[in-house]
Image (cartoon, rainbow, N blue to C red; front, side, top):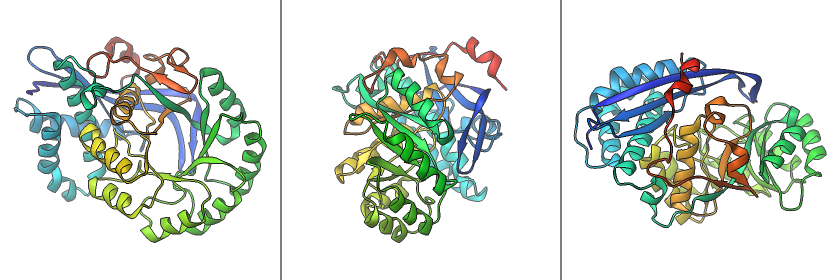
Length: 371
């Protein structure tokens, strides 16, 4: 492998209805897409996590172009995983020096996705079937990003699209959240499941109370009830009182954090975000370790089209009982390239297994959204 060029596309699309979480609102949908190329014109697409802060995409584009790209371009690498390891080690001290391990990890994850897309295209295979030749082109999925204030309408919209599992955001006003969830959960059909996501919104004491208050719901899981960096004892205490699975992982960073979490069995559902840390090279071994421990691997994702398809390919490739997260909110950076109504049916997401991630972005479509 020898990459000779990297093109970056910073996009931001205003949306009518902000995406509301326990820590703030997203008033637009950002993305940083990467397109790597070799001297023959073969290419691969990647995506860098940049939901927060609002100007994060511009900063990370500069980090890719001026700091990371010189370490990658015109060098020979045996495989995407080899490149990931070499680049991670080359940038380790700089990430410590700047006290910014997160942005470096996000950029490396996006580059790794692009390298796997490129490598699979070279070998005329999809990424999923590069991971596992028997990988399926249909995987279970659920509707995500549902705001509590609009949950009944959004759940019905998701149901008509083809979903039968739904994740609602909470973590701001427990009394009201319990009341609203009680109202709409009774309308769920027998084959449908509900998840709740607190986005690290509670203290351990508040989370313990919330778990008890939501015991009337047969949840598929409760996500991020407390901050990801709370001690293991706090997570274990919550697992002891919870009548439903606990999930987290999008805010863990690095192989060591995931391995320690899995070994201590702090979670029932482990959710690394492929664009936030690790790319395929980092997430594949963590997903397999999760399943080997008898836990459930479910990719976290809330961004643009490249990250969504990368999440689908890694889940299909590693197998297991996991389900793909698909944001049901308005997002032209997905919707311009993917018709959910066509590819989601009976709770299953269908994607093509053409080489690489199975698609190419028409960059003309991105022009009006580029910053």
